Length: 286
Length: 138
Length: 136
Ligand SMILES: Nc1ncnc2c1ncn2[C@@H]1O[C@H](COP(=O)(O)OP(=O)(O)OP(=O)(O)O)[C@@H](O)[C@H]1O
Ligand SMILES: [Mg+2]
Image 1 (cartoon, rainbow over the protein chains, first blue to last red):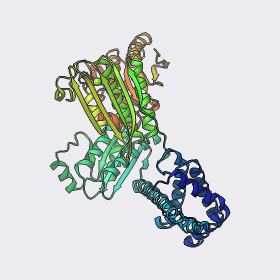
Image 2: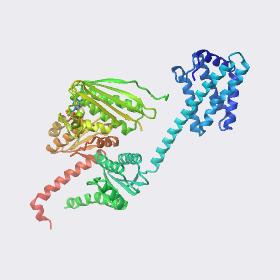
Image 3: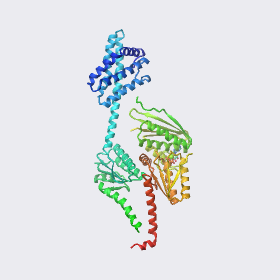
Image 4: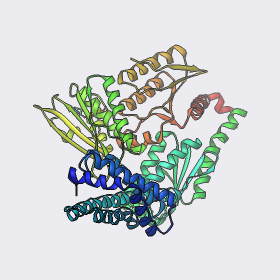
């Protein structure tokens, strides 16, 4: 709920006129709800920032959270939520930090008295509700992105690309391969080829229970992309069921080398590199 | 409300080879600003390069406008190519891999469509061709 | 218009594309290379695209054309250093770069050219009737 310019002015005056007391009480109430998990000094600093943002917005005119002149206020609230989300506080604990201001304001309004006291209090508490909800929303958004980041890290952890031999890297795929994961794995594989200068890659799918069209497409595209970069891929560990799906789906593996096991694949690569030298050696001797 | 870089719509004329290079650079900058992954940046810049060249070669020149878009959940790059050339008489044919009237590879249009998330085309002999593409962050 | 420099290293011409080329620059490079192959008698061309952050159908076509032209002029072309993101994009675009040899980096590219020249040399030996009778 936006406040009118007069209401905003009165609120700003009320808060700045009792600055020390407001921050003191506000900090106390929050500290009670967080039970010492945040230092008093840090809490106090946060409360002072919030206090300052509300007062300075109110002094400039009507406080309307989505409006241009409330940029600083929004930034302060977002920063608070982000910090709380990172430190592992709950959404409720975060929102309470804002709602606590209601108690403080109620006390001040009561003391100040006057004809408008009830109407003012209703208006102020409407505004505080809005600030609280805003905090809640940015808290949730931060959590979501934290979770997404963590999911991505897990994804990377679960797909190691290893250097198997000089010039040969392998990626043993384990578990269900959805399209997102297949994509991450394949990008990492290609990057590892570049980083290690390896012209051979083995994609081992022994540990993959099922392959659908999309995943098979990802693997195929990776093989083609690797070729464009100047590297060759061998696919190993295709189990009978998967071979059947691949055929049933009508996916063409074309001239891509496939081997029963990772060991077979490595032997194949070593023979490829070995044969070339062996083939030429006698010529040079002759 | 996020404190991201917000580039307003940016326009660029397509009158020469060098303009096509500028379109690529402009699209790259916006794609970086909305935090597309490296692969997605590469895809959208490549698509833009293809479409800008078509605008120049077949549309007789035109212009492009690059904007950031936000659907509440994700941000993205939107690019609009406009020319007042002859239009494309048979769209199905033009979108066939390998079809070209200009001695190209015939991959520009169809490939660009595969490289972006949304692809929209309006074309007629009277108004020319207008293509809007969007790539969203993941 | 900017021009892409061509370096001669031993028997190899090395082209390292460092800029976002306009189509005209790409066409110019194609012409310059053909001339340099003839003028130097080099038998290998390495095109290093490590610095390129995209390859579109125009540049792709130029690379294929350079490979074909150099073949006619008895030189082997290898494109090296394609970035993963570029390769993934090319696959999606549908460009297959047919007839182009590729390698991960310049050193591998040199090895490839050396191997190709050696193979050719072998063929000549194989075709030689005297060599045939000489083998037990
Ligand atoms: N803006 C346009 N105005 C008129 N015709 C167009 C336009 N864009 C494309 N076309 C037509 O569609 C055909 C296919 O375009 P596409 O970009 O797929 O292939 P290309 O430009 O011929 O070759 P490539 O892009 O692979 O080098 C063109 O040959 C041309 O006839
Ligand atoms: Mg085209």
